[in-house]
View 1: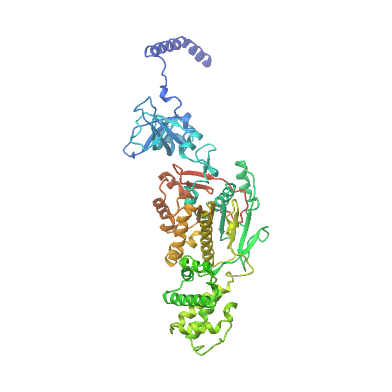
View 2: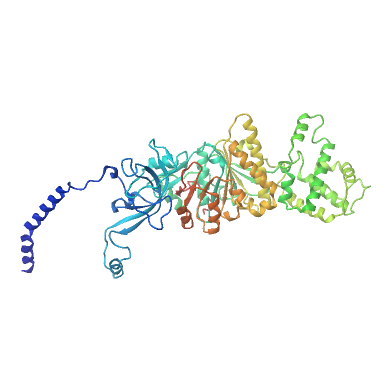
Length: 617
């Protein structure tokens, strides 16, 4: 009966409600009719608000209705203002913080919300979003972007740019696919491979172990090949020697499926490894043993790599000059009446390259003879030696060599000679120089368009050997590129140096200034000759500022060290503060990408690699 009574009572009030609705409609009509959204606000996703005491220049607070929250995620690009509203100016900006969710008409920490939540009662008031936008440009009436001169006014409409507009504004289009921009619906991030302002200005791939650097490197190799760029990958761990095969990693296969990509190996690969060493992929169909040519190495670079002190350097250079005199006297170089040899000798820069036809065996033999003479094992009257020489060419020239050594100014510091002999002997026993059973670098093959060459240095723990290989490779590539440029042939080449901190750490640069000057010169000249360098390291704190100054493009995976982040901030100018703050919390496969030509750096979900890796970060 009670329910019936309430029902009857409600029915009695219907006429009263109807009269109230009529009165309300009359009042609305008197006021001009239902509220209409101004034309300038149609299609807007939010509206700018007043500044607060904590506001900063170029940053604007924006409120977003609940229904539009998904249209303005982090990193979304927006257009602010309208030509027919406010100050008639139009700006562009990017979401750098938020959206953060706030209840309508209540504080987020109000008593009713807190008390209901902690007591398990469902109370969900209506809510909206608040976010921070950084103003990056002003649109002039012709649509061109210019630096912003003013700040958007409060109550200005905010519009989300679609993917095509965003790509155009950020200039993230080209043929090298990096991945998907976070905060956007399937928006691919790309950059061009054919602009000298991008790849030849060098690339740094930095991040802690497990951040996804190896996946990024192998993915870049795949993209470079598709773009017709010759890629040379210096592999210190041997993890890339199987990239000719499709990936079999379960997680990678799932990631590829989500991106509608197929597992596939990189074609046109070759694996090069030092004579006397092994490769991590002995079954590779195209593996090549290589040797280094000692005559191609600057004597100053050799002294630095072998860490000679001043006294030892003097002995080494003395032996080096004696070898040159021997080669001249016996007509090996320059050859008699050979104008090309004479011209080459005049143009020879020993800060860049060694003396032609000189071998490590020759230098070792001369050092050993000098050490024996200073140590009184032989005297000025001897015409033979109590030991055999390593160099077949010098074995028949002992008497001439002894005459030259006797004519040279002598010294009594046998200890320095023995140290030089010992270190050269260690280098000689490695059998990596002037080995007739292996090939020298074939720069014509290395620089073929789309060719991928993996230099497998995993079977040597000697940083000296690795550095010698890198130094010889870079010098030879630069020389080859220069010769080809004279014939108007452009060879686009990218050299990827894994574990770059071992080659160019602050300590090594101090010890090896000549070698670093060579690399710096190659890096600067390479920009004009289309020779790009990619430095990969999980220890960016060991890279000095001189190296960072050579790099214009960065892919930054997770970096936890705040000191490293502070250093990188000084070197990379177009990464906003919100991305630096997120660098420490990036998941594996995520990266901050800063490329020359991009209007802004982006947080990117890097594409999974379709090829096989032995170890995946």
